[in-house]
Amino acid sequence: MTTATSTAAPTEREESLSPSESVLTSVYESATRLAIDAEVVDLLKTSWREIRAQLPVRMDDRKLRIFEGYRVQHNGARGPYKGGVRFHPKADLDEVRALAMLMTYKCALMELPFGGAKGGVMCDPSRMSETELNRLTRTYTQHINMILGINRDIPAPDMGTNAQTMAWMMDAYGQLHGHTPGIVTGKPVELGGSYGRDQATGRGVATCMREFARGEGVDPHDIRVVVQGYGNVGSWTCRVASEQGFRVIAVGDVKGGVYNPAGIDIAQLDRWFAVAGSVAGFEEAEPVTNEHLLELECDYLVPAALGEVVTTANAEQVRARAVIEAANHPVTPGADAILARRGVPVLPDILVNAGGVTVSYFEWTQNIQQFRWPLERVITELEARMVAAFGDLMVRTGRDGIRPRQAAFDIALERVARAIKLRGFV
Ligand code: NAD
Image (cartoon, rainbow, N blue to C red):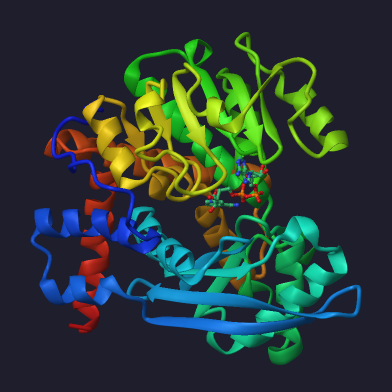
């Protein structure tokens, strides 16, 4: 397998690009290499539709707070819009736009019949009560309900949201349009959610790690893994990767990190987390700051929290042999160039974290058919799709002598451009 990263690497750039401009860097590079029609590229530079909504919410102290919410539908040539909803203080319109663009290419790379979308509300869910979150979610859903639909746009969880948030969204949408479980994915199983959706993204990440290790000819037991983030994606990545034999040596979350070069017992860490609400303070490991965590010597560094955490400021200090992008857009274009120059392969987000949208697709099809798959089938079908997409990407990387991210964008952009042409958009 070719994992060389020295060819066709971009030059190092200043970190002055907005999130959407960063994503477009990859799109333009692929479009130039593939000679994609300029009108198609023009169409993909901006979004089909962007909603910015004022969300007034009565807080528990009876004061009115006005939040700002967004839903961005980037491109729907390949099917209904699909993408998560993020509740985070930094979720602004451009970040949501960038994430919607990534969804267009992620769905195309995985051959899912969806376009790309994303939603966000600028808020700090960790400082809000359950009733406040419930009211905010309903207000958000009411403000965007007219552009949602089982064949139009299907939201899902992302950072700061979860199955409960999706249950509230489904209920708020149902009050306006009648019971429609397929309107969101990542719901609780009791309300039509798919078995395995909670673990899907992390399982997909671990599958990519396993396939990458197989390509390198290294046994997972000999691979030291560092994971930033212990939410949905980070925690499931740790669980499945440790089941597969990988040695998780450090984990961090917003409150701090822990490091044990002999390997962290993830079942024990889960027990600690259930009580403490953070990995910080776990006694079977040493404390480590989040900054230092990214610079620990290891084999695979797995950012699974925020975007833009590996930048030109710290890419030289990364001491991992490979970076596995579990979060969306964790490596900036400038950092990507530095890692490429240093020969550190980066497995791209649009492949690595695509397990979530893949099982969301399974959930949507199950809802449409009013039929439930057993967990074993979900896992088997997820595995098959992740392994196939990983294999296609590595073949393309080797064939064209390009970096994995560019191979992923080449495959995805070709598919999106073809759908645009076939529909007669341009
Ligand atoms: P989550 O809210 O469940 O967890 C986020 C984690 O990041 C938490 O452990 C939090 O403590 C940690 N974190 C937040 N700020 C941090 C900081 N400053 N430093 C270190 N850690 C910090 O979110 P999630 O659903 O696990 O999503 C994580 C990433 O994966 C995001 O980039 C998201 O877009 C991406 N993603 C998620 C899914 C999914 O199915 N949930 C699918 C695809 C991609």
